[in-house]
Length: 106
Image (cartoon, rainbow, N blue to C red; front, side, top):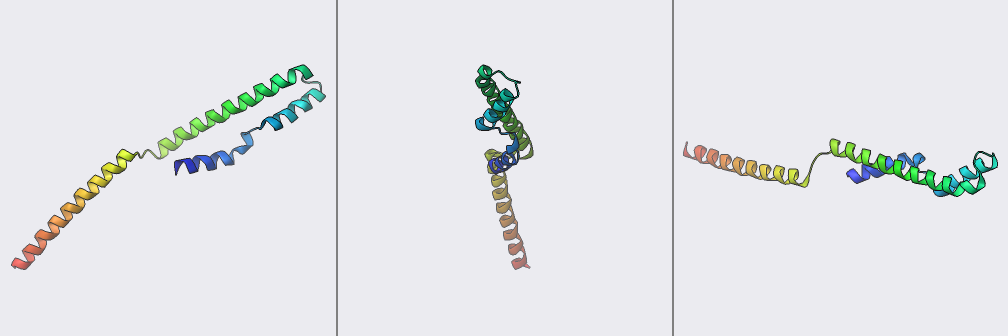
């Protein structure tokens, strides 16, 4: 379920996910406006795409940390709870058996 939540949040934050094509178009516009020299354009695109990927990975890490904090249940936790339930169920059956025996004796 945690993966589903993470994917949903990432989908919602898709605005931050710049594709190489969008970055290239943006840099091409900067070249046309004289803000970037044509020979620098490919390296600018590479740097912007790399930066976007780094920020996306950082966002994923942050989201995983938050999800882990919100849902700190491990397989071991679940197994421990199942063991306790089994113990309690056995205890209830034991007590119910004693109660039946006591009522029958009266």
